Length: 169
Image (tube, one colour):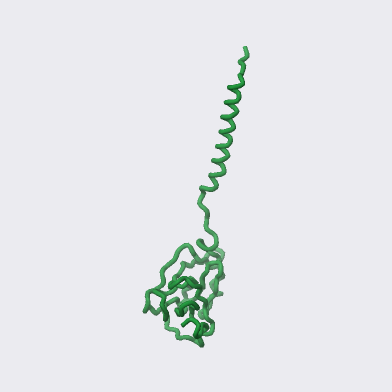
């Protein structure tokens, strides 16, 4: 005895199978979107240089981390290049040995302490760690607020003329 499948029953089953396939494909592709991403680049851990590359004077710029690496008393610190005042990029001035904001004249020493200007605090920091490969990693996803005005971590006077000159004043 054979059972006949009428047209209406066949179309209903075909539609249900099509809907099930579309739902399965949607769930399959959505699963990848729901997985957390490991941040790479700014906002995550940025791979930089070996610890020996950071000398006791000057600063090593790490563009991918938007930071500078400096050595303060055998500790390597990652200073944000963003001025706490209005967010301008603060470059390191080789001639003065200080960070000088070209926008409004804030000046910071190599430790990121506020020396002058309208900034409300020192430069912000990011945690630094040495990876298994022997290189430094800057965690740009974590920000540590800079020191309050009046804090002096290192006492280093300017080593020469300012890079900003009269433009930042």
